[in-house]
Image (cartoon, rainbow, N blue to C red; front, side):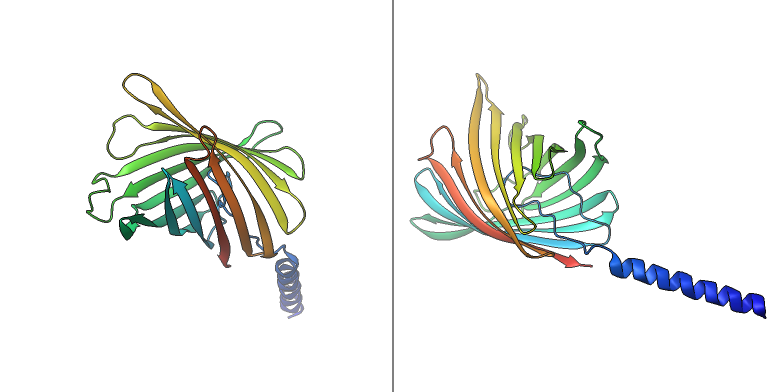
Amino acid sequence: MKKISLLLLLSFVALCLQAQDVENAEPQSVAADRPGMATGVGVLPFKTIQWETGFQWDYADRQHSFTLPTTMLRFGVAPFAELRLEYDGTLYSDAEWQYQVEPLILGTKIRVFDGWKAVPKISFLANIAIPITKEAYQSSHVAPSLYLLFENDVTDWLNLCYNLGAEWNGVDAAPSTFLALCLGFTINDQWGAFVESYNYFTRLSTHTEADWNLDAGFTYMPHHRVQLDVYASINCQDPAMYSNVGLGVAWLINP
């Protein structure tokens, strides 16, 4: 009887200590892939769901358009991997205002390496764009895109992120090359900032066409599960031909 009582007491103490560890554990914080075009290596924790959405105004070819919403759902499906579902819709004026439904993007991000000293953290990102309408402006073919994501924590307030990818448009056999370099700054526990260069290189029959872009923005966390952001982007070759501004929110829904 004494042995049983001692065993029950030890079990009760162990449960109390476990509950205390859970209670004292750091609350899970939002870690968003927005804003910007570069993507960090971070993978959503297992069994968590995160919603990232926003609004963007674009000025391209001397015409205005609005992306609303630009939204993504992320699901942590393993300790090292997440699934992603992304949808964008574009409101534009062509004699009259029209709403363009963009292809549905399904993807996954997988953590490959956690980094060691100067060796960067590495993740792999794969997306596939699936047309969901039959309108003339949309390709009838699926369009994959593949990326290697790298990241270094330079200091406790400076982060370096760089991406290399290949993007297919669903029409041409040869992909465009995507290259991004981003500096992230931690101002304090709530405020952050970033500046990045994101660029596309498209191989044509006689030459390679380059598209150089620069954007920057700020993030603010009113709660450890919520991040707000604002950003702007310009085309470095011809700022008058393309620019955008946007704002958004990321929300860690659970746990």
